[in-house]
Image (cartoon, rainbow, N blue to C red):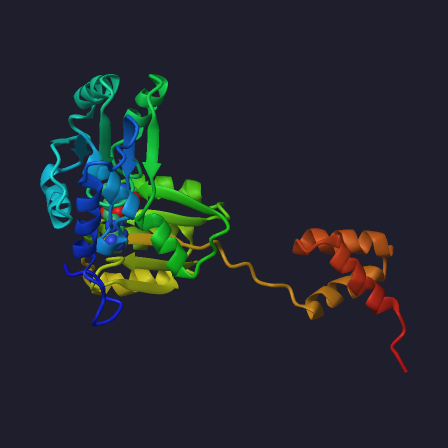
Length: 309
Ligand code: SAM
């Protein structure tokens, strides 16, 4: 899939990257200190590789890849010629020992995944844990990540978020997990496969509520990048009749609480002030509405002061 282009004359990022890789390979270029380097790679757009990522990959002794063929395409695009080996969910126990031996010999070992940040919904966390336990240097070279990219562009609150990775593929287990997220005030972030999107959204609407604001971020940084926003019910209905393609992040905002208007507060207060003290009336209305006592008290004062001439 071609990357998204900002305009017709976007720079040739691989070409620029190859220049940096060449310079990093020059005699006299400073080699990174020995240790494990977790290096973020693009989630689509090749221009999202960082300068630091290229410099370290160009100087690593070996690059551990989630899939050597996938990473081969990336490394090739930037002219990086380094030995690689696979490090994935099915061989990571055996490969961890090998990485630790290499680090003990003073090597620079880079870890990359198929896309984005290694160890985030990708292999890597056990390797980091063991390297740290063994006292080796671990360096994270930050960069693209699908969850954070989706959240930043979703228009949903970003003050708190809960990254929940992939939900179970079967509906019963998925609904059970979703129930636990229901009370959360954070924006919920899920990774999902396109063939499961419609079913997952239907379960989300049923369990979390069809009126919750949500977004489906698809093919981020790529040619067909899309951010579809709506309520969970609207998104579930859309994808029930439209096939989703590509890579997907689902984001769900917190339940929209109905705002209590000043007129509502005044009515509640007036009713209570007939038989309660100001203090008790304020306490009761604050409790009912969740609005701070200070604000309710100000309304009580306004109600009890005579109207201006
Ligand atoms: N380590 C990666 C990261 O930092 O985002 C995530 C790896 S996880 C195995 C792959 C999932 O990430 C995909 O199934 C999709 O849910 C999400 N993803 C990756 N690239 C994406 C993109 N360009 N647009 C939307 N979602 C993406």
